[in-house]
Amino acid sequence: MKQYNTKAIMASLLICGFMGMFSETALNIAISNLMEVFQITAATAQWLTTGFLLTLGILMPMTGLLLQWFTTRQLFIISLASSLAGTLIAALAVNFEMLMVARVLQAAGMGLLIPLMFNTILVIYPPEQRGAAMGFVGLVIMFAPATGPTVAGILIEYLSWHYIFWLTLPFLVVGLLVGLKYLENVTEVTKPPIDLLSVVLSTIGFGGVVFGFSKAGEGEQGWGSPIVIASIVVGLIALMLFVLRQLTMRQPVMNLRVFKFPMFIVGLLMVLSCMMIILSSMIILPLYLQNGMGLSTFAAGLMLLPGSALNGILSPRMGRLFDKYGPKWLVIPGLAIVAVTLWFFSGITPTTSIAFIVVLHIALMVGISMVWMPAQTNGLNQLPPELYPHGTAVMNTLQQVAGAIGTAVAVAILTSGMEKYLHQSTAPSELAEMAKAMTLGSQNVFLFAMFVTLIGLAIAFTIRRVIVKQGALGPMH
Image (cartoon, rainbow, N blue to C red; front, side, top):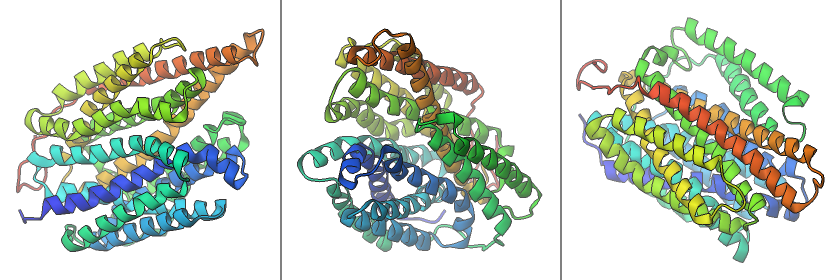
């Protein structure tokens, strides 16, 4: 196996990935501030998040193809050029339109970087070290979005939202310079033919589904809105045609042969359930802390920091445990911890102590760190090397879709729970009643997340360790 400067390559990818994920969530805290500054409605401001997710949803399915068309260095440079341009434009933005363009450029950079990071790890690390390496990616994927709101809260309080982007710029530049020096081309450029019909179907399909669910989660008309129904239906039809097209092609854009590998499927289902659990609870919890318990944005952000920090710190450790013992002893107990924690969460009220919520959140994040990376690494390990780009593309794309669905379902459950309570209330406009309604809605969301966890737990019993024989054409069992 060729020797790479793995530490420098990883440092460069992780710095850039961290900053990209950080600015993704940091802006979410600034939304109400931006609505005042730019004089825009909540629905318009929501586009800063929806646009970001939509760009990822459209770009991610193409990454399997792009990884075969461009060298590792070319893709890295394109992705960072896009991220840097987006971050600079956002830092200088004077109106909503400028910021919107910046978000799309940032999302394009991230959409290329994350699959590139996974693919590079699969190539430069031998299977017995991949768990620990993937654990560091877990640190980025979990810890960066968690620190975003807290740091952004401080920056908005004392400076202005522009500083969110001024802060990330130097780090991206450092990541780019380290990458330019040490990152080598690790993949083969085969330039398979590009099937335009597949590209169009994938864009309409994944884009339509992500957009539909994101729109449904905004809650004006929610699921009843004609735009939501139309985009989900059109998206699903396009996806069915996309799948049929891939199955009949000799060189598909997204190779669905990855679904022939049972542990890949199990790993994928674990990752998707984690994504839904995290997003549904991570959206509802800050809302509940602010509107149900009356805490400030900054206080809510601080409360969620210990759990997220611990999750990030534990990720590489869980990866090492996975390398040593395999997935079963981590994934099953991890999901059990998550299920129990969510059951406790479903009983929180405005009088619940802050310390108890912090402890629950820590337990939830520890449980997730035991499941996410081990299941994902085990699944990808079962694929033969030529399917690595496709496996990472499938996983990353479906994570975006699961995230959009999880968010939309959580918001829908929260809203319907609140409406149901306020409908029966004698004084629906009173603050105390609003807090009770928020409590009921939030409890329902945690029950939904617990239900998803239990399904994941049932699937987890089928997981078994993939033993990769070096030098063989593909993994053996």
